Length: 121
Image (cartoon, rainbow, N blue to C red):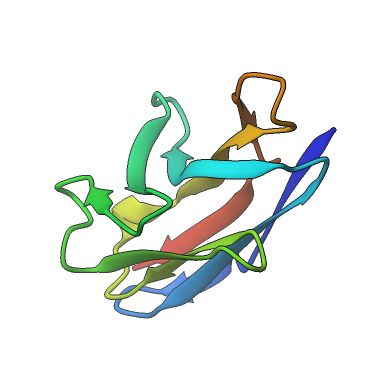
C-alpha cells in the first residue's frame, strides 16, 4: 500500500503564507508526477500545481506567481508554498502522486486525505 499524508494547512489572513507538505510512504518503487489540487465548497476539484520527477512544473493561472510547488525525491515529499493568499484560495487541498509500487506493476494514482486551508479577509 501507499499512503500520502498532508500537513501544513490552517487559518491565515489574506496576504499571508502557508506551506503544505505531503509525504508518501509504503510500498514505493518509483514516484512519477506529483501534484496539488483543491476543492472549495460547492465546486469541483481543480488542479493547482504539478511537478514531474525532473522538476518541470505547471500551475493553474489563478495561482501563478503566488504558489510554488517543489519536491524532495529522497524524502518522497512534495511541497506547496503559498504566498499572497486570497480568500478565494480557501479550500481543502489534496496531494496526488503517480506511484509505481514495483518494477513489475504499472503506476497508479494515489491521493492524500486533504488538508483545510482557510484564508480570512
